[in-house]
Image 1 (cartoon, rainbow, N blue to C red):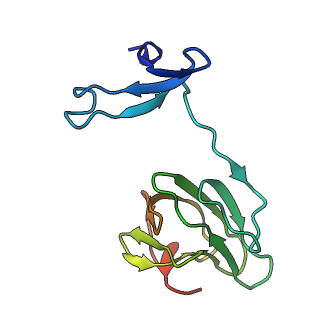
Image 2: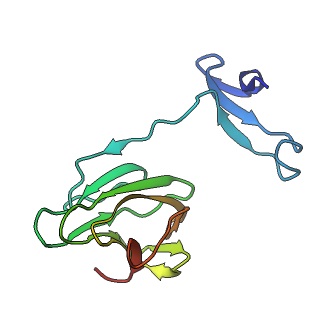
Length: 156
């Protein structure tokens, strides 16, 4: 199926637009629209994050650990519903990396739904995939949380 032929609202001719899904395409649910045309969306990537500036609620953030045996504490802006955020921890330091929410927004995961701090432990290197569920709740997507890798808490 050539999705370009089914664009209802278009930018730049037929290269990018919205496609309204029919009931059979949506699995019998309410019809909805998808952005079509581009093979992928290029997200903003920041490799110069600092503990003095909040992490944005979108895109990819690379958070390095500290060179000393102390902890790094980053602050994450409030979520935007439906918007994805990736945080790449490069924790090769002596101490843990913390990402706390700006206004006590919570992380919803298998560990619970009242936690406000995400912690990378044991010099863990990896990527956390978040999505805004509400303006006060981040959802953790497909991530293995444990006290030995990435954990949630209520304090740094």
